Length: 200
Image 1 (cartoon, one colour):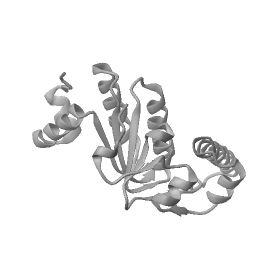
Image 2 (tube, one colour):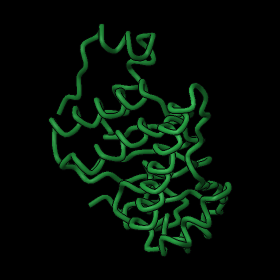
Image 3 (cartoon, one colour):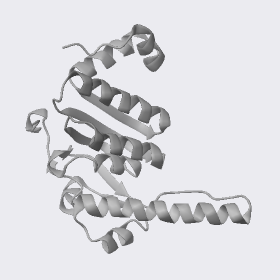
Image 4 (tube, one colour):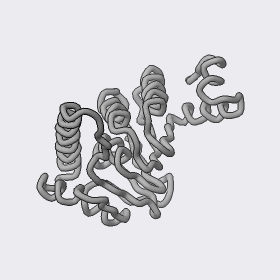
């Protein structure tokens, strides 16, 4: 099976033939990496890769996440696409999985959510600086509250935690070790080696 992008597309996306070749190898292994800030550009890249991999087969996709978070809607886009595509997505947390990174991580089924030993997890309320005319401030403030309610419900639904507990926990930065994230319901399994992944 071939996971081939046009050379011009690879060059634009990766900036060099060497990086493009590395990306090609990742796709051949049905692996996607999210590292660093989550933004619209990264979301477009990730969902494009998911669509490409789905077009080749329905075999599972491995999604490695090491992110401090970022743009809420960009995280939502990736979250929704994980649920939208036919292949099962297995997420592996490494480094840190925080904020919008958690939103993406929780899109996978619980039994497909893995953590490496030194990963840190963090949930909190979406951040938003509001300024402008009074009417605009009121509109944006309402939207931030609506966004927070939605994120809290997403976390509660994916972890099995009571919504009121999630609301309390996300009121401030709430950090968890892999073992704590396992107890919380964010992580499905702690692993130390690739062979521990159950790709079904």
